[in-house]
Image 1 (cartoon, rainbow, N blue to C red):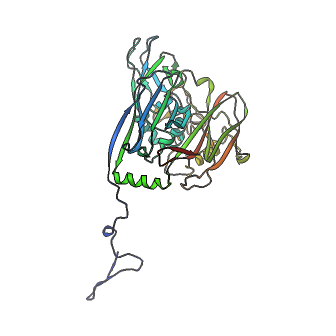
Image 2 (cartoon, rainbow, N blue to C red):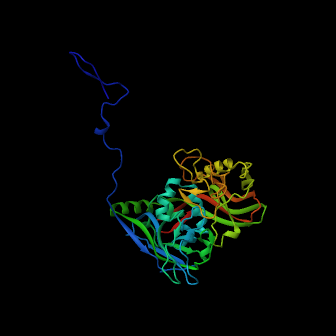
Image 3 (cartoon, rainbow, N blue to C red):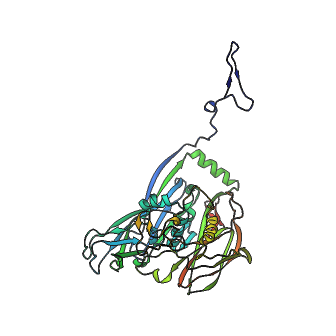
Length: 449
């Protein structure tokens, strides 16, 4: 930038606060990537097609030529089965849960590295449901989520279907959790063994699918087939000089450190109007948050739609190793904003103007699509659906807001005390923590919790 004077002695004057070299003429500060090649890999399941209660195993070979794994996701096709009765015209099918996404099919998700278990997530559908509703934005879920996950969609038959007739097939692409849910590339070439992913599917069709005709529940679907299960990822192969350099550095005693977010989920059944105390052994060095969602127990395994409800939660007190970290006086029936604000601290989204929360929609409609099974409520029409459809409550254990390796609180035993209202519910409690996987020079791995 310069100043120009007009006259016989025209000259440029450079202010002292500016550099005379234009930005476009300067040397690029960004590093050049090392020579490498990319290939998108479709890895089929070793287990073939599966039905209710089945399990799919995916195995990724590791070793010198395996490269890095980047952008992994799970792809599968769901085909509904009918062998007991005819299906009427305009029968509506939708997935259960607050997000109504195809992740509801997943009962358990586990990963193994060198036969050592890294992730073991029971009731994985609940973790997906919670993260989809509260860690994504409303535009993402309504657009990308609908296309890739079938989120918040209703599938309707155009004509009467006979026994064993072809029913709608849905192909979905599901993000992975835990170790492979990181945005970092996983170094397969350093691991001496295999990386395995095991997905256990729901044991009952009613556990994830609601079927309705003109608003009346019917039980016409009694099975499904999960087929074409594949792990899709980008394989990045680096030049041998880089691989040799990394290995030489590790031979000096250095370890390759791979950080990721770990999820642990447990559930507890609560009677009506219960005062509950729940203790859970964690033994982690960096607990970031504790979240709880509640579902009407009677709707978990039947054909009714199922959403996470607040059920009049009036207390949610969390203690770590006997030290209370949250004694906020909640009352979700009267003032849900307080509970919602504390939840957003768990997600790192408190007063984040760049993200829109899905709970802002009224119960009567979701993105222009009527919500099946929920009647209009004038008291909620202009409010949010947080307490009645996408409820979650939480306590943040994050000590600093910087992206450090271990930024949460150490915890051996977590204690949660809460009260809930007149509906018997099953409470799902989710623990989110920082963990690291260390790769040794010989290809073995160890976990830092």
